[in-house]
Length: 166
Image (cartoon, rainbow, N blue to C red):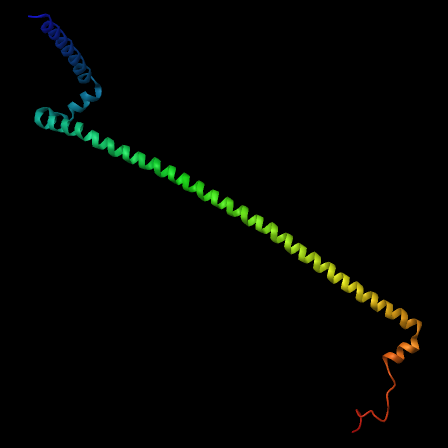
């Protein structure tokens, strides 16, 4: 035997010892012992081909099942991020809209208060002017009562009064 063959033989024996220790650790596990004592475990122990087929099926289905779970988790994360992004966009658009509405209300309130102020000053000026004119008429009326009465109430001509003919 060459040295390489003896080296590989030693490695194979070490590997076999490690596999035996793993097998012993698995067989001494309390959950494995409970499973093997169950009716299903005994059924699989009596039928090694079905056990091997089930083991191969479980091992091969782990990859697609894992990919499916990764896809579901990724979709959920992307959906949550999408909702957060959409919510952020909606809040931003709502905030900008609120800001625009409030700015419009400020401009509108300035305009309305300006119109009301101008209307107040105009109406108060007109009322003051009319009141001063009435006061000046009353003052002049009190100083010249006969002439003011003659102007306001001219003499009535009795011959021309036709309101009481009948």
